[in-house]
Structures are given as structure tokens and as C-alpha cells.
Image 1: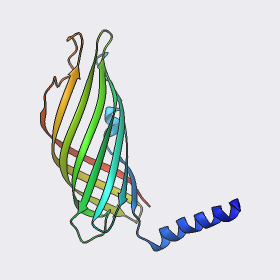
Image 2 (image 1 turned 135 degrees about the vertical axis):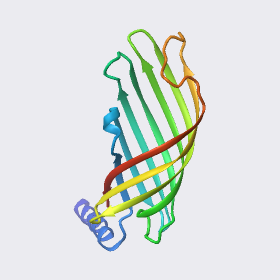
Image 3 (image 1 turned 45 degrees about the vertical axis):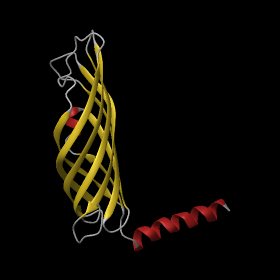
Image 4 (image 1 turned 180 degrees about the vertical axis):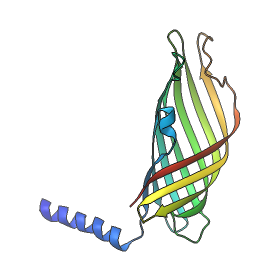
Length: 177
């Protein structure tokens, strides 16, 4: 019985991949390795015009000339509405998104934590090459609400408690299946 179930499941997966449009994308940010950050994104087409993407990251960044270290996680759910005639996940899109980040900045003596809630909207374009490779580029405004918790007040993580607007820009590469 287990073999029959396994064969039926495999046949379903293969037939869906051969007969249907490729609806899943797994990708990573192209330049995140420079900042010692691991990024993984999963996008799923919901229909011809819409998709949902969930991105997550972990960072362990430390500038070479200091003892400071920035570590933490983030998650970014994103709804995408495709404007082009190509079916999702291919073409030009608008993408409202939310971002949550929890980071810790530390050096040999002090430690501070940064919690960020952000909202934004991106415009982007995703291209599929050879029905396998995906390149995704985007830009857009974002607004962030930040809370810095530093009991000593001696550590400077570079942004203080500044809330406000910023620009999100990026390029990702991945595979479609």
C-alpha cells in the first residue's frame, strides 16, 4: 500500500509539473552574502495575476575594523499583483509588503536590541530564463517603526530610534518549478 501511495504521489507531482504552469519560485538575494546575511524566499503563484511571497533572513554581520556584531532575524510577507500579460510569477508587479526584524547589536562591553516593523510597496520585474532560472529586481518606498532597547546607552547601532521612510531595493536569483 505504501508503494502504491508513493507512486501515485510521484505521478501527481510529475504530471502537475509537465502539464501545468510552473508556480513556485525559490530564490535568494544576490548581494546578501556581502553583508554575511542568509536570505531565502519562496513565492507561489495564486492565479495568473497574483502571487504570495514569504522571505526570511538571518544575519551575523560584523564590520572587519570593529568588535561590533549585528545578529538577528527578519521575515517579509509580500503580496504581488502582476501587471504584465505574462502569467505570474513572470513579469512586472506591484508588491505591498510587511517586514518584521529583531536584531541585536553588541560589542565586547555593551548590547542593544532593535525591533522593527515596516510597511512598503515595491515595483519590480521578474524574468524566467530557460524555464528554470529566475532573476527578480525591485525598488520601492518603505516606512519603518523602530524600537531600540539599550540599557546602558553606550552602544551606537547607527540609527538610534529613528522612525521613517527608506528605499528598499534589491536583486534576487533563484529557480522556478
